[in-house]
Image 1: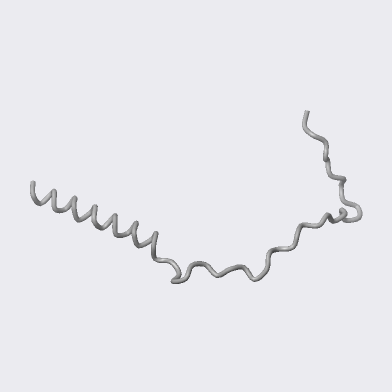
Image 2: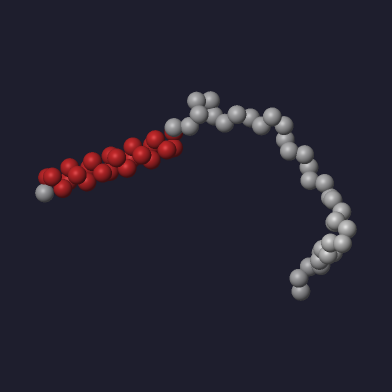
Length: 59
C-alpha cells in the first residue's frame, strides 16, 4: 500500500513539474515587441472577370 502511495506521489510531482516547466520556461525578457504595426487593410477592387461579391445580408 505504501509503495502505491509513493508511486502516486511521484506521478503527481512529475505532473506538477511538467506543468510548471511549460508555464514558466519562456524567454528571459518576454516576447520581443513588433517592429511596426501592420498596415490597415485597404479595399481592393475585384480582378477583371471575377464574379461579383454577394454583399446582401442573408434572409
